[in-house]
Image (cartoon, rainbow, N blue to C red):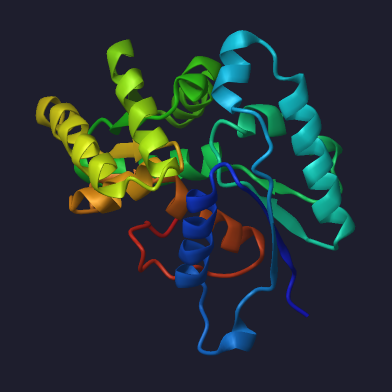
Length: 245
């Protein structure tokens, strides 16, 4: 019997749907029965994670995420994937207390970034794009340092635009999100031709809407799907812009 994946989603809903699509695309399967069963809990009531981090008021976020994980475990899942980068700041505070693993999106994306950067530069280097909350936690900076990855963090002014693009994706305004992302992307890669981590799960959707090619993007959604399949015991299909690692 195949293990059941629990998806802790709703942060945001479009990113959760895209994660499930990526997870399905990367699954080695020829028929329905080859795929993994999954249970998705889309908890859109979780307060804004970045606001909680910046204000130092994360107790409600922590409580809700823990309750959601306990609910998924009660439903019989074997592992949990949460397609929200900023939420992992809170998930890491209790994940070792759970009876099933949470697949870590930070580690998954950092591993993919290192693999991609090694192909392009003698000194592995990548840009970080994410929420201001994720940036402030230092989770990606720590993961990069541990892997010997030179992580470039944009000036603070960029994070206002990242937030605006993320909000557009959440509102379903994909054309504008894609257009604004293209400007930011061209600005960053024009000064430093290295991979770009889309380390908020709305940003891969903006990248897709921009019409830009995907080979220089390291998507946190694709990375999480890849790592989740490995956690479940599968050999993921590297056909979705991820590198076999």
